[in-house]
View 1: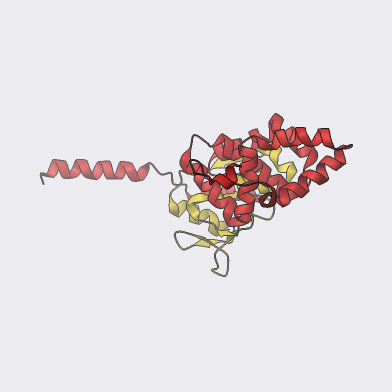
View 2: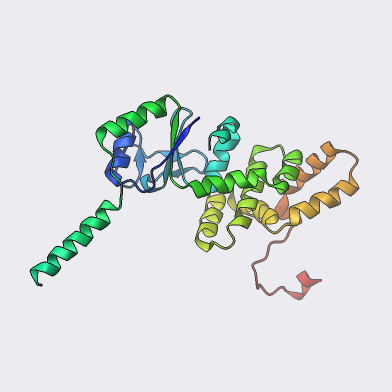
Length: 84
Length: 167
């Protein structure tokens, strides 16, 4: 069983510490990769804001919290839906 | 400002700051280990996930998924169902509309709106009367959705139509 951990109410520093632990960082607004480039939500082609991010498994997928991105994730990883 | 008021203000400010959660290093490490073992994911709003899950369980989606196989069209139809569920949440509704246009342009939004306005189900019913097999429904339906702007005129609510269009 996969545990769902809600990060909505975490402070910015804790969110950034989580990102750092996964090899990412932040400029305080956007999620950045290890080269300092903005991470784009691959399903909507938009940069992901720390405030709105979800961190999902499958080679660490960071996406924006919106129905289109989440539905796209479930289309790509249909087995994942059982965990949510 | 009297000193006691100043202290009160400080307490309120600290309380507001503490409303946001903060995790220690050990807790973060523990969670990251679980994440890397695929035993945990970090979510932001269960409501958004539930919205997507509920529409996948809906009777409407059960009908549509039988006939729509293209991934892009499947997503846009799902987004039409999501738009319908968000109709009483104007901000979330507009946010999703913007996301759809950002990724799939106006054509994508039109496909979603076609579903949102309950026209797709009627369209499939009509199509079923015209064709001879389920696979033919899929072909006709996907062709129609791909070229939706060729077949459907989208007008804004309360928009005055010219006499020519009314005809």
